[in-house]
Image (cartoon, rainbow, N blue to C red):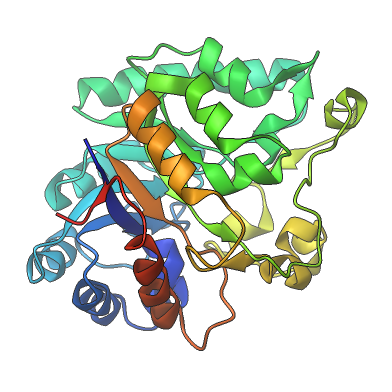
Amino acid sequence: MALKVGLILYSVRDEMAKDPIATVRKVGECGYKYIETCNHNAIKDPGCGFGVPAEELKAAFDEFGSKVVSTHIFPLESADIKEVVKYNSIVGNKNLVNPMGSFSTYDDMMKQIEGFNELGRQLREEGMTFLYHNHHFEFKTFNGKTIEDYIMENTDPEYLSFELDTFWVMRSGLCPVEMLKHMGKRVKLVHQKDFAWDSTIAINVVGRTPEEREMQEGEFVGMNAESNYAKAGGKHTVREEREDKAFSEEGHAAFTEIGTGIMHIQDIIDAANEYTDAEYIILEQDYTRMPTQIDSIKKSMEGFRKFSGISWE
């Protein structure tokens, strides 16, 4: 079964901020039929993050025969879950994704994982599938084991699945294909980006040795509801939150459109089809050098069309 190509609206977030409905129409005109909404303003908005009523958003997608197949909600711990479920039920979505966690100590991590499992149980009762989306920091370790493995091993597969972001797996110094094999049927969605061949920053931002990869006392990775980013409704407002090279201006240039970088995307598609239960491979274009984000997603669509094992219908 071929992976269906989708798009997360985070890829066009600047356009969404200007005019969400017009942007949804532009995305439809581009030909993206499978949409992942992205709400990084969940403290104030249980919907799509831009104050659009569910019925209005669904109507805009319906114009182009598009459908919402997933949504990111951040910060999840501050969201009104009942309202989130209500909104997504109206737009026809059944997949709810936690786009990131925050981790500092082993005990704190295990407490969060317990919370993931319980929330997943509650969402299952509402007919929703709960997924966790990784960045690079989930491949930091406690006692030699990655945070991602702790999450996978300590949650019920009935209550928590994964949206594997292959770009961030690679940025953690690991192989996306091997990770797809490792996580197998727990992976229900795949996020795909590409890494620029002329990037001036290192691919691996986690560390090469076991010592470098191990979480240290006092170390904090990820973001939560207390971050300035969350409080500002999903906007970077202070330099402190961008000191990590993965989020610096130099780091932004490491992102490029699908098929124009160095990632082995055909191998990733083949592995996802063979080893996982993923139905969708979803473009997430964090940053672009192109004139507009719409130009960027059009370029990535051209890139995707060069690969086999995918579907647009």
